[in-house]
Image: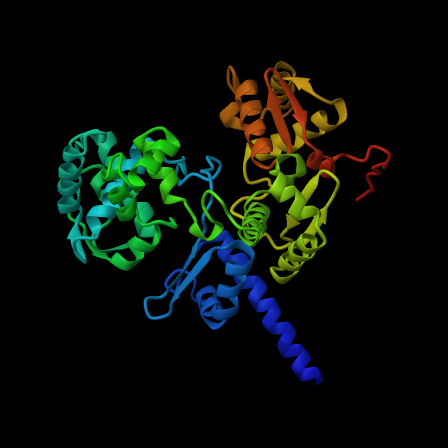
Amino acid sequence: MSTLANQLVRAEKEEIARAIKTLLGRPLVSLHDDPAAFDLIRKRRQPLIQWFDYFCGWRLVVEPRQGYARLVKVRSEASPTRPARRRRTTRAPFDRRRYTLLCLCAAELLTSPVTTIGMLAQRVVQAAAVEAEVPAFDPVRADERAAFVDALKLLEHYGAVTAMDGATDSYLVDEDAKVLYRVDTTRVIRLLAAPVPPSRVAAATAMGEEGAGAHVLGAHGGVGPALLGALAVETRYGADEPTETQRNLWARHSLIRRLLDEPVVYRDELTPAQSAYAASLTGRQIIRRAAEEAGFVLEERAEGFLLIDTDATATDTKFPDDGSHAKVAALLLLDLLVSAGPVTAARLDAEAGELLRRFPQWAKAYQSDGGGPRLAADALEVLTQFGLAHRGGDRVAALPAAARYRVDRSTDLVEEDA
């Protein structure tokens, strides 16, 4: 093969890896928001579709004319570690009310390609009124309008609605604000990442104790959990009696999904089927191939697996990172956990308080009564989310991956003269 051909092959592999990591970090990529990323995905869409289907069992939808690419990531269980976040300054996670209004808004937006914020609010009022389990929506209340605005701004962020005239934030202070929206109904539908369409689940549940309805209701012990569980059913893996091929397919997809989605995967957290697959010759080869083709560095140890993204494209958050006081404190407290072994929560609180006393101009939001325990709690949440620490009862212990951040105390640090 000529040098030019080698360069073209290498360039193609690098582009595919970059596109994979982009989609993992942002499952919805729009032409409007990131033309270069979308053009790359559109250009390499066929190998990308094949990669995600083979290694993860995830569907990639690329719509060149409508200008977006949607990676339909499916998880067998919900994860509270990646909530939807408000697009306003607080960036606080969505609460139950905001998720409810997000779903109601999305459903009502499907009825028309153009609407106003007032018309949409009234339709949500009507929709909430006919749903027995949904609290009434009252746009007169400021807190209700704030939740409604947060739901709409997230839909704007995803490109499902576009403000043609006016600004969504104006509704916060004025119930009569005038905002005109254009609705991309196709994109609204694409936001739902569920293997089973909700309409099918609703139809099956309505059958009551007959046919499929009995299985849906009985398997999960309640209508709410039944609906959620039924939405996530993936028939490709078989039902009550899967074949050997289907079991292996599930083991491959579920394991690689976890590797791509979670900061670290420990062997003792795997199911027997996943453990057997990871230990097999074929499984190890496929995991290494998936990591290589996606541009990750695979770190495999006795305790588990870690995929390292050296350019931080595929992740929505990083560690170590000085982007927040909690992350800085987490790194400092992690050294204590690694060196001193399991410690009590009270000691962690005291150590965080000592940090605040040593640096009185740092972390101003915590420089008040009770600041130490609050900083320790936020730092521990960071460590838990990154698979670096675990709290059991009143004790906090470092997990194996935390050893990556151990301070080498045998190294002398010499300060050179300026």
